[in-house]
Length: 198
Image: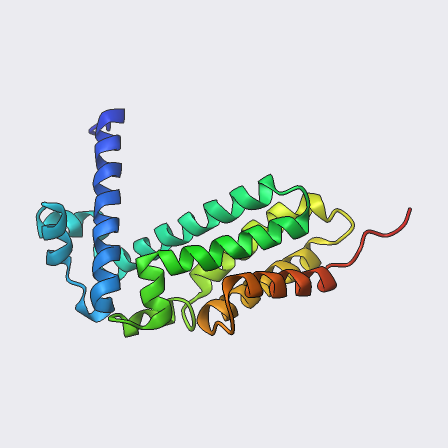
């Protein structure tokens, strides 16, 4: 069995990152139906077979792009919640990060607006479980130490509610980001039970 060296692994990770970035750009520009493995290969200077070897199918490539985009979002959310002095400041910072990052991320913006990529909207709506569930898992884990008086299932329900509120504002914004952040934070403040008196 051939042993993979750390250098070889780093080269492969770098190639995978380049392929994902190229695919994300092409998805934002052309949508799922317009994405071709050959174009991803051309954009990164590799053969089409290399792209197939790495991902297998176009569907698997798109799933990997979605997972990479979600990881980027979740890393930003985790950083902001962990740095916040209290849960409500953390919620506000995480909501702001999500809304602003969605506007700045070309692929996410294409999904939300339907511009040049109308067939991507199901990634956030009818097929949104790969986005929603990891986010709920992360929030549940991060909120648990800050809400020790609540059972896990209640923390999870609150986390899912916060995520669904944020996704709703992403899909159908009713005002500027500051207003959405304030509204969602105020609603979550009302929903999260206070710590019981000792």
